[in-house]
Image 1 (cartoon, rainbow, N blue to C red):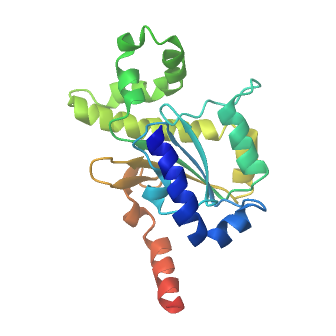
Image 2 (cartoon, one colour):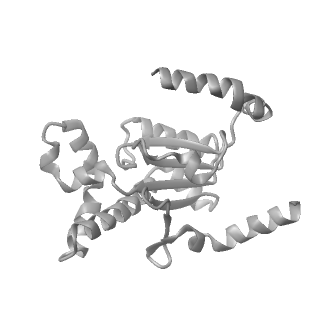
Amino acid sequence: MPHFAAGVVRFQNDLFPEKKDLFEKLSKGQSPEALFITCSDSRIETAMITQTDPGELFICRNAGNIVPPHTEQTGGITASIEYAVSVLNVPHIVICGHTECGAMKGAMNQEALKDLPHVRKWLGYASAALQVVDELAEGKSEDERMRLLLEQNVILQLQHLKTHPSVARRLAKKNLMLHGWVYDIATGGVDAYDAEAGRFVPVDQRYASEIARIVENDDCAA
């Protein structure tokens, strides 16, 4: 804990003064570009991966980057989605899985969760992804099965997102876009789901035209 406290002091003394104008602006409200749903894993640093500043991402984290299908039962993820979509009007939602995910390892080995009843129940929201893996990955190695599960879980949670009324309304109006990512901790690579191709591809390939426009605008600004 002293390490964290020392970090707060460095933030207050060094970083905050450099970004004082930004924090003053943020003190008056927020207008994030995306709702970013990812895993609670301590190795996933969203701002570092996306190179974003405070105020750009509205972040929800939980074991396995899961989105329960919509029901009348209130939960933290459901409420956060509703707020981000209906109040903050985020134009994008990203669900980001990652390699070496303990939750997905647990989903593949239910016996290991016998003493973790809440975790086991929570991972039930990934069971359909596991069934897809069982169907498609016969004869594959454990590493290949895990990679497929990471991807299929992201796709499944995107489907769950569409059951939320706030999301369904915005999708119908075509002013909300859903994105599925998988982050590789060891390499720093991020693959994004290409719905038309039905597969995950590197982000620089999936968003090639958008990235090119940003680079062009940066060049013009310079």
